[in-house]
Image (cartoon, rainbow over all chains, first blue to last red; front, side, top):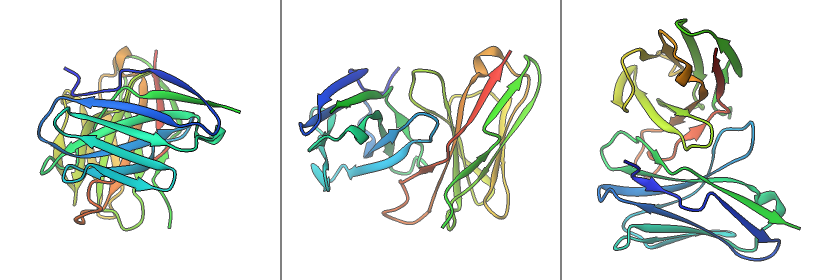
Length: 113
Length: 115
């Protein structure tokens, strides 16, 4: 039973264009959502997060949108750069759950020069 | 400020053996979580330690056990290794502070191969 799903295993985008990565969840108790980026041979690096009381959070080129009614979130990267090429994981946690993170399966983003 | 460090980076064991993986948390963090990442999948929560006590556990058998020390470093022990235990084991640390509490910072992981 996958509570967090990333349905696109890979995404290819041209440099300078927008990258949109999607994530769906099923557990209504999730109240905090995070995106991590992972390069080969490195651990996941925290990118951006959003609380369930918000529907948008922005940090530089990265924006996360949350649609609670659809149980869907997305990460927008504008403009995309070749250095953004990595695997992106969506993760969710429920308040009081001791920070246990439930991860999606990841989306590999390739940004072509 | 030092980040999360894990040792060793790679490990090869045979089925039935026992293994201990180590993690030093980021400075100022008192909570450590362990995750298992199988090839091609997202990380799966094993357990978390807060102030030396287990503070949540995922769907892993009892042969996966852990410890947290007074300096907040941690160990993951796996007994009776099985082939399916081959994976990347990730350690993450976090502060127990409102607002920052849910941000976990990860180490580079230990790649375990069970033959």
